[in-house]
Image 1 (cartoon, rainbow, N blue to C red):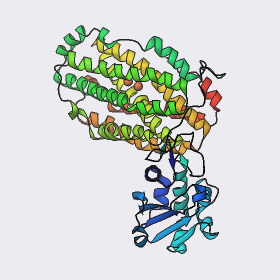
Image 2 (cartoon, rainbow, N blue to C red; image 1 turned 180 degrees about the vertical axis):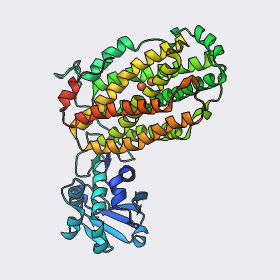
Image 3 (cartoon, helix red, strand yellow; image 1 turned 45 degrees about the horizontal axis):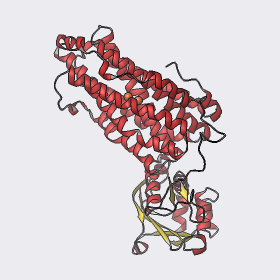
Length: 450
Ligand SMILES: [Fe+2]
Ligand SMILES: [Fe+2]
């Protein structure tokens, strides 16, 4: 999705980036003044009217960002203006913002150059975050012939079809190999699972054991519902980028998440008792992850499909939720039920679900590796995102253990924290390799045994 520079959606996408940029937060921790940025009118270059951006920047945070109102000029202590050509140079990284002021390309209409100079690192970070937004300049052609809609958002048109051009469908690349596997392995029916012995076993469990099985299954149930609801923006991004093979694979991915949601629901309804309110099992860190972090990272793709936004989405969905937390959950089921030979129906379903999930994670690793192979600098975005999420993931495991004393089935906190860290570190090591690989190598990579 492209946004035309200095329009409301572009400003919103930029502000979001600013608030996710730790380097900016540090560099601007003492800056506390609103700022006005002006794109000068130039009808020949497609700027029919002056465009103004109002940014309320305070101690490393962007508290407000919008198109400026006329009275803002009076109220802000800093105002900077430039022509379209000079903003393009600055935003493309060809011209340093402070150098632009020194050379008169960026005019300081209000404010002190002396103060601004002290914040040159913060200014560089502001520009770097603006570069993460898919920006369209008025003097450049829109991606195709479609005009901008009223929100300033451009829609891509199609140049050719993969299947009827020399390109053809690429059966050799990893997403397509996963697609072929999914057609064979992902077609199990949750309704075919036999829960008769599970119902008998449920009656034999003591209260603590029942609660912990119900707790874990509730976390899986809501996890599966979340990933079903939150996957669609990824399909839209791949469709927009004409990645036909990836969209084909993702069609199986979404179907499988829907089945997992059905599977957990069937177990809860038919084994653990009548349908009831279970959200009290959602602890604070779990809530933060599934009510906020996951949906916001995925829905951000609807208005921003930049590589950095894709990294944040895949890191959240595939590496942390699927690759670390869910993997730790399977380990818990195994520890509770496999060793004791309880609930064969549930175990069978979890085994099938886990096999589907290993394809999902393989795709996520592929997606991230492809982005990192294209631009190794994105590793910093990945690391920054993972730091926040890892803390939440470990906290959510700890919060479960905090509720039980003693923990039924003899489950050990350390074992689960270590398992989560092990899963996380395996994924990150794999991803770190991608920084020095080519996209062609990533495409031919062999997924872990599925
Ligand atoms: Fe799933
Ligand atoms: Fe999944």
